[in-house]
Image (cartoon, rainbow, N blue to C red; front, side, top):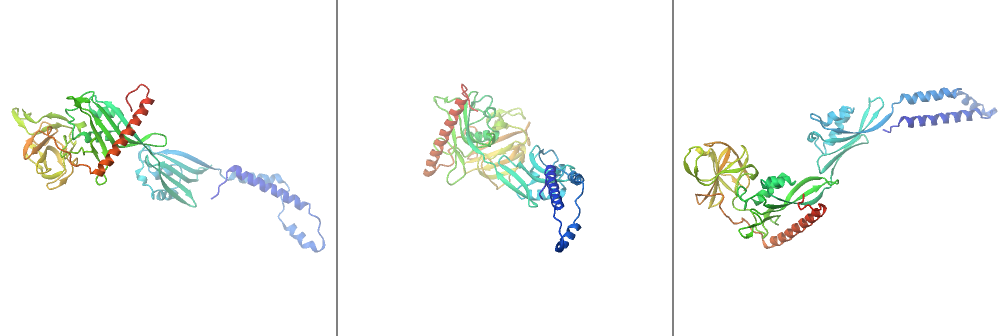
Length: 456
């Protein structure tokens, strides 16, 4: 429907008034007709008379325009509050429920309105007359996520919804620093997202004993991808590309002690992490089955004074103190051979990894596996608890080699897989590219930072 403003209506009516005046003047000056034109004269006399007072006609037109409500187009930014829905927002600005329902049905073709979040902004356009009794929705738009925008437009008596992908620019980011209290907190302080830090810790955890190896001042470098919107704001970060760490400093025992790990995706297989020589860093067993940022070693392998019994006894594993319900992960891929309550051990799980190695996990609050189940390395199998004989929540972790208990913190193993010749060539190309891009990023950041030597 075409709508006019008050100014446009007055203009149209004025044009009609002028036309009426012109017709009246024209008819008043017609020549007198006689004879065979008598029928035409009669027809002219039957025409409705033009008011003698043209002011009266003008007043009638003015009164008509004043009775027509003025229609204006408005645009508002509405913010989602707790309890709001798309229906309640549209009704709040005056859209009738029937029209709002039609709009929401069209919107559902590309987006579920139930996914709206508190604080989310929605741009709404609508028409409203001066009496505020009639509101028509013209359209709306909002960001469904950092990467998607939703639009709704009215036209031809219906609504059309569309979903657009927002173009993001991928940029490689390099962060350098030194350890203070821990690797985890030091990386967080330099702006590395928590999930990227945890990925870096996991990639290094096959060689690094996070409870003993790191010392204050140890240097590290983390390279990962960030995605920026058109305003340059970082909206997402992922894909750890490279991490290096030098426990006990770059030189330890007279040798280079820097551990370097690169992310690489072989032609056949899943993405993984490899050392500078193209060897998969994944080993048969993890050094620790818990998130290093949430645990600490409270009792080592070997003889000790038992905390509950009070006398010296051989400790067959390592105790990790951690908050209750902290996830416990399988130290390696294998088969569950025991998953039950077992005396002083409480809830107890044992995994057989191969003909040589098995691992055991005790005092769990809950178990998420059953006997016979196949598990993969890093899979969550249970949660830290205090079942059995214990003084508080912790994980008792054991490693058995040929059915003999060994110190979990001293085992050394070979990588699980090697790259093929073709994959190794591709890895070297990817490695060189990561190093080149990281160097370029570091150089540009240092240059822009002036005398600063750390990059953000």
